[in-house]
Image (cartoon, rainbow, N blue to C red; front, side, top):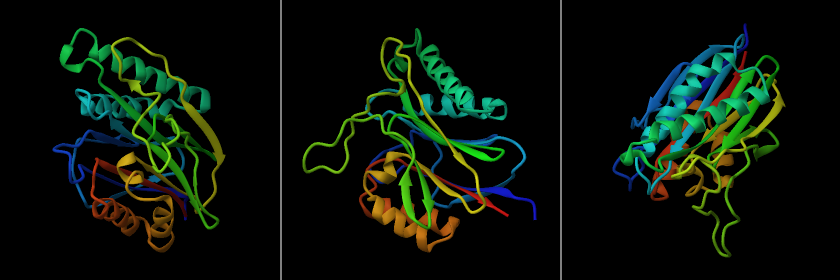
Length: 247
């Protein structure tokens, strides 16, 4: 059987936000501001680049959903041409410039911004990338390991997480360049990656995420991860994508 990539994705507003500022991109497909608690699974042949990413619009600032939607649509267009770590980093800086350009001269969009994290599957390798505190994990038999790099300061004593973000796409009145985090990993059959916004990881500890991924297949795991975030109060928008190399 020809190897393939299976992607299972879900995006939900959570319980406390009145709308969803998260956006998703899976290859040519984008999901912007949509609310669903039913995971969707898509299969893609392993013969062309496949980009999967979550963009989390900045809460507390205007038009987060505009910024996150702009970024995923730009990544959907750029994805087929991305061939390595340098190209991926350049694409994220292009997205950063696009957010600032869209806000220029429009007071209702001033300071809009978004984080982004994702994977780019290439022939024989997988790139993990992020700007901000959305995350990418590798789930293996040896356990769950975060492969993205959080752009956030350490939590205060007694706290597990922090809401401060040190680097985003857009997000200020004046242009700030970004230094994306991009890493390359060998690609093997059975590899499984989780891409998600902090609406999952803030309320749900890594140990619980690891346990759910260990005992459930992709569709059930995505639902159970969403359910865990909801049962923990659903304080933020929840978006996730499971990326698995199958045969």
